[in-house]
Image (cartoon, rainbow, N blue to C red; front, side, top):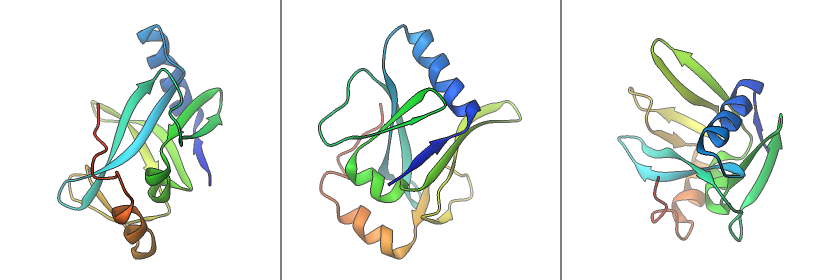
Length: 127
């Protein structure tokens, strides 16, 4: 299981933690939503929760719960500026398709069944 960050993404995570004044990592996950099926969730984390996987890249830490990792495994995350918008951009080898607005995505069949049947995935909420 792997996840990596670009230097820009890692710098953005560090900036957000510094701005907040506390925290140890960016927690990412997925939730059921949107016209295509899944969307990313993000929150700054103060602790590692039981069952979470931790990834370090360029001096920044990511935390991912086990169910979300089934969908996010192998992702490479960048932080991009597109026009006036800034966002984390995922290069996820498990994605099959994205909605037109780019807010939600669907995963390839082998991963989709594992993710949507995983207990607790539907209860995961963005904060």
